[in-house]
Amino acid sequence: MVSCFTASYDASKFFYFGFFAFTAVLTWILRDYAAAPLSHVGPMRSCLSIQDASLQADCAAKQVVLRMSFGNFIFFAAHFLCLLGVSRKEDHRRHLHTGLLPLQLAVWIGTLVAMFAIPSYVFDTYGQIARVLAGIFLVIQIILLLGFIYIMNDFLISKDQLSHRIALVGASTCMLAGGLVILGFMYHYYAPYASCSLNIFFITWTLIMALFFTGLSVSPWRAKGAGLLTAAIVFIYTAVVLFNALSSEPEDDACIRLTGVSGGLQIFFFFFGLVIIGVGVMTSSLEGSSFQVGNGDAGDGGLPYRPDWFHLIFMLASAYIAMIFTSWSLAGASRRLTNSRDWPSAWVKICSQWLCVLLYTWTLIAPTLLKDRAF
Image (cartoon, rainbow, N blue to C red; front, side, top):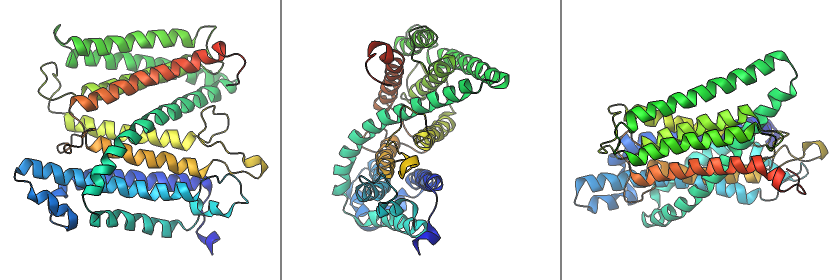
């Protein structure tokens, strides 16, 4: 009976990521367009006791975000605990990951709906926990991204064909040029005056870091799998992250000349973040990645990847989505079409950019510094 509704491990990854992405978009829609009506339903009526209308709206929006996030968190946490330690095909618990997907979808939806019947004080506690878990997820996300970068570089280098070498050089050149264009764009729109010293520092420091790790990536001291392509991908990624951070600064900042398009930018950055999550999770189990999360061994009766770790990543990602939609501040949710326009959110993104550069630099020099260890 179970086999009739069992998907492959690759298909299961798409199932979980696809509906996770759908719930993230749904959270955004509910926060912006349904928070007020939902504030009259069940425990969310507690927001109506707030006298200030704007604070009342913030309360309702925050409650919607945290309830949707907690529903996803509970769903993936239950899977993580039930699948903990599963690594071989002989373990029948593996069917919980790949089997009965229609039933799992129904349970998932039911869990999300049930969240709106839970007292509000529960989510005050969850919000504090989610802030910590979201920070952990940012670190894991960067590690998964770096793993994907090395996989791409190894793939193109391993194909000793002219077309692949042209693709490698062409992609590297385009991304390096694209990163420089983004930095120039930010100089013009986010650092137009000499008084914008902080933004000038952020942009200039990004360029300095890029020059450093690009030079290191093509030096004799680099890691074996590194090269111009890995540096180019990290450069354009960090440039986009910085662009996201600067666009998250308060709108009343005198250094911001790019106005009237913040909603469109935030939509782009939101889906960019979802793509990064998807790429990291979908490629984390590929053979040859030195950054595999939950490494499997399908060739010896093992599984292609560890399903418990897979669900752990999405459990943490659920907490991260809550922070995106509340600007890392539990005082209230962001305004419509603006996921984060305040300094805490901007600084989180700046720190994640620096962390990405730090981790990438470590992957470049670690094999040279620690010659007795395998990487």
